[in-house]
Amino acid sequence: MNASTQFDLMTNVQTAAIYAPDSVAAWGDDKQIRAAIEEMGELTAILCRYVRGRVPAEDVHEEIADVLISVTTLLEVFDAEKCMPVMKQKLAKYRGQIDASKQGTP
Ligand SMILES: [Mg+2]
Image 1 (cartoon, helix red, strand yellow):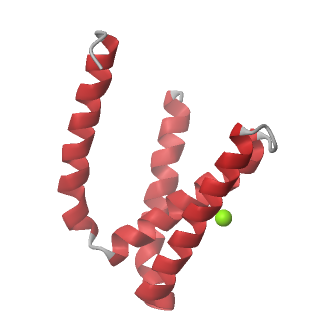
Image 2 (cartoon, helix red, strand yellow; image 1 turned 90 degrees about the horizontal axis):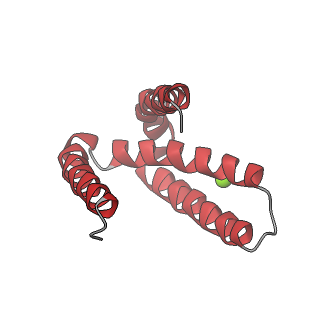
């Protein structure tokens, strides 16, 4: 992913996060959770079809977008402020795993 696409990703996810409070206010926690479950299921299903060579990558794009948007609503429902330290910790671990992998120690 190049720097321009990384910027677009951050901008789009930030926009979704800005919309999330209104979305949760409009439809409520339960509906947001159910929608996220549905979107994650759709992504799972399309990825299974993709790895079998039954759909093109373009079909995956829509579901990735849906899941990214849905995750921002989950963050709204489940208190993003409490999720961020967990994410920061996991990203540090992830960075360590990547660095270890580069050095040939999985
Ligand atoms: Mg979808």
